[in-house]
Length: 220
Image 1: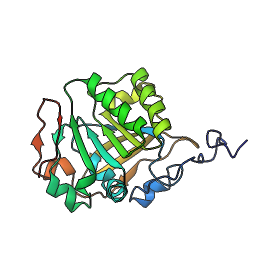
Image 2: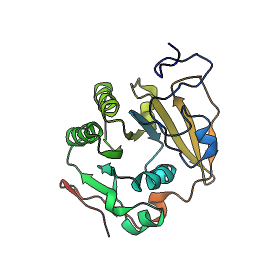
Image 3: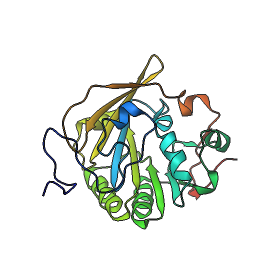
Image 4: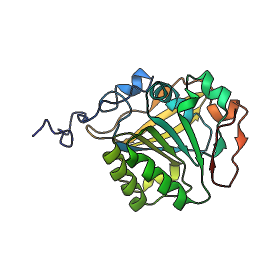
């Protein structure tokens, strides 16, 4: 029974059904079940504000995934991603799709369909708001598609219950990214991790304000 990845002892990290994706940060890998970002689940990244380095935290994993056959889906990002900057971080642009949406309903629908499709390596979504029901739908879709899903949100959501198996709260202080694991499958609380990511992705690169009409694009 303990071989079932859905069952674990209280003092141990849970096993994973699908190979995890190394984060590129060894201290974070040690704290995550499977040694990296989990597949087949939705992870929540809750930030103090947009642009503190949340994308820098994901860049090593996204670069690795972009060398595979699946798509990288960015849905309703708060900025239009800047293609040269992504390429400099190792992202293969031919595998990247950016979907701008006009409402949270569209954002969540696009994220759910992308997670369920099974042909996306990673699905990142920035809804302005999402409730527990919406997150549960995304979690079920991620389980079906078996891919890496991330939902970004404000840190004020940390106090709310969530079906996401992994929840991280991100902050920044003195140029370092503070990562607090709020929830994971397996053993309990961990200390805050201080990661030396590269400079915050959205604060140092010439990104452009996202246009509102729904379309897909990458700024070249």
